[in-house]
Length: 117
Image 1 (cartoon, one colour):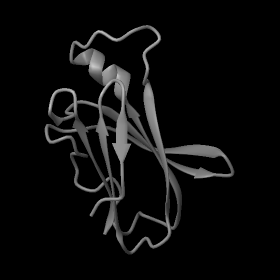
Image 2 (cartoon, one colour):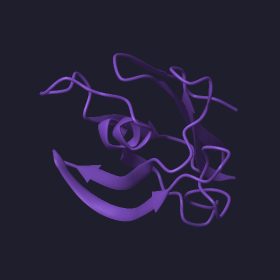
Image 3 (cartoon, rainbow, N blue to C red):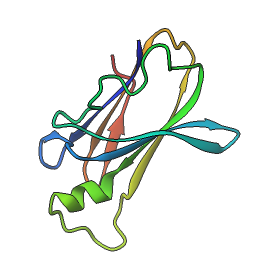
Image 4 (cartoon, helix red, strand yellow):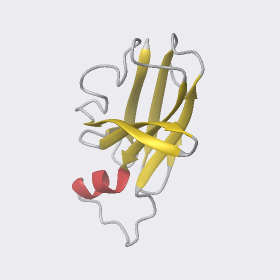
């Protein structure tokens, strides 16, 4: 089934098109970059799942969302230093045969996530 993500910009009320994202694997406190991508017009990975069912393995992962750069690109004036810069979500995959969907709802001052379907 794989891993997917979807980012919604709660300040502007729509998908976070153009936000840069990184996916890392993590182990013993160390992160290893797997891929970088930019969200499409729907706020999703353009190629479908970030990792497909054959690529997703049992283990721990980190998605890093470049929140401050995205809002600056949208013309939002942020204080210096800004409240949120890059939002890192650490999560575990216990059953890689299942679908893991990691959505992010974000503004320059807050974020929320959950395991979606």
